Length: 321
Image (cartoon, rainbow, N blue to C red; front, side):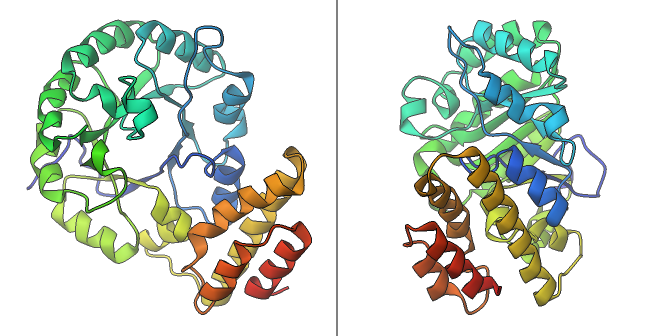
């Protein structure tokens, strides 16, 4: 494969993927300040409703003013073009320049309502949606999708539809929705599909370490845009490693401490009750079970703690006080 997208820049453009409940504005800003390495982030999706196309809190989460450290693209999960346009208008008023349409969410509660990946078997609906949205939206539009709902060949009917519209980029996660996040990504399918797309293609899926990135970048030399999700949570220094910057163990551990402290301070301020704070912090630490050499048992023990003072003491034992 010699040309997988219309993008000749070989310097990797790295995008932090949306992980619901973790990669909020506070995390994005803290990660950018403490680790860095990403060029952009995609925010967790908002779901517009008739009464409230987008909540003020969700607008604030993606406003450029709150995301100066890491430019962030808002994401909308919708099957109604009118609602999408109403939401996009509010995003534009807040200063956003780009909006992403989610065609990749695999969760059954979403897909059975013909949203997210649930639209992939229906290229006619996708075309009707984009026909209304793209000419009227006033923002650049990108699309994030999977290979299909149940059948990985469904994307072959969707790509020609996407090619008919002016899109900023197409983000492809080479799994079906039925797979959720299990099983292997289908690299052969990605290799077949990416050259068919007339827009810049972003690869997304199972980028877990720098060596794995090198394997993929050699296999797909035409791809220069990469989205990293769970790998960047498990190893917050991954984007730096991809760029050739290796942190010394002591420096890396100290940055984990700073990221932990930053997020703990944030959640203590905005959440009511220590149980909610612990839930949020345990969500972050669950990605770090294997991140710190020799600390797996201590981290697993930490995740069972339900008292904030004991949780803090457990972190001190892991990271050093």
